[in-house]
Length: 434
Ligand code: AMP
Image (tube, rainbow, N blue to C red):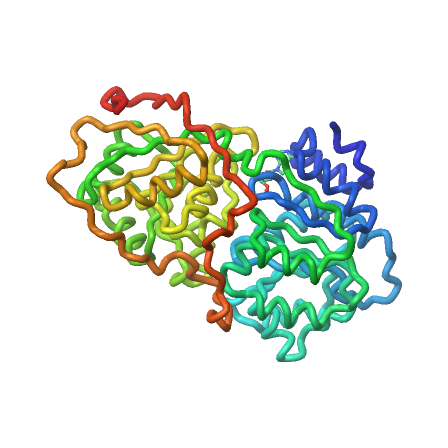
């Protein structure tokens, strides 16, 4: 399959080819023609599948088809996302894929000054990428008119509901013209998502990427059992002895992320932390430093699992397992992307064995376990309950969290199928199979 057969215009094909994409991903091949036809879409696809181009390319084409004669550029496409990072990333993709077209786009999210956003909106944009909260701030201030929206995209709809954005989404929907094209992307299909889709979509085409999580297929997963108190030491040892570069490390809490980052620095491993308590500027800087290799380790809470787009990220470390199994899949989705094999290393203490079992149940596979010599768990230590971290959904906060859905059962219709067999640790002779 080639991009040339999808019905895309020259300007878009050129942009795609400049990106170095030789062929469309599965979701792109399925979604692009349907979106071009103007149909509503309900798509089951995760980050890492190429879904952003899957909706952005045809959206750009549909907007270009209708020439705007006046100098006024009303918002004609609205893309809603759960997180600031994801919004920023989609905004970049829109600019990238649309660079040969005369369409204007901007991104709005909270945590930054509203005035520059107001100025940009006033000048007119065709495509608006936004998080729900800040979007409604603009609506309240009458700095945004949504009455010309022709295409609505809800990206990572499951995560938006999970974060309690449903009331905000409903308010936004009420402001849009009735006649419009709707595209809903979600990694999972809970009853809540189905209800939302039912009320929103008009005879949608249902598109599912056969592999729910192709990214994870390219990820070698390994668990190192280790005592909680020795995790930091083991992490430094693994990074140092295997000379790992560009390591994304997940902790459960913001505080834990900061502390670990400081400890790694003291161990001589340059690192920075990224989470919801940091200003947007600080997070953008941290991510940029990590992307260009200026820091070796980025310590993140789960906020970063959604939205971070770092191509060819080789290593993800679960310093602590997430409380919610689905987050494991999202975390490891940061590696092994777009055809590159990645490695997901989990440091698991005895307290986390239940979390590990839950994850394995979700993945429908057992993750290979390896004991690192010198770091064998002390059998005398007994399990303690895992403290609930607050770092789970810690930013782009909805204004009303009370309606936030529980995650239980959210994966009822999906499986994060992942390979666990055949892991080979590339270089560490001290690691033996256990
Ligand atoms: P997404 O799922 O939209 O976050 O995309 C995941 C990654 O795949 C991004 O880094 C994209 O730049 C990359 N990508 C998207 N489409 C293609 C393609 N057709 N070929 C290769 N890489 C792609």
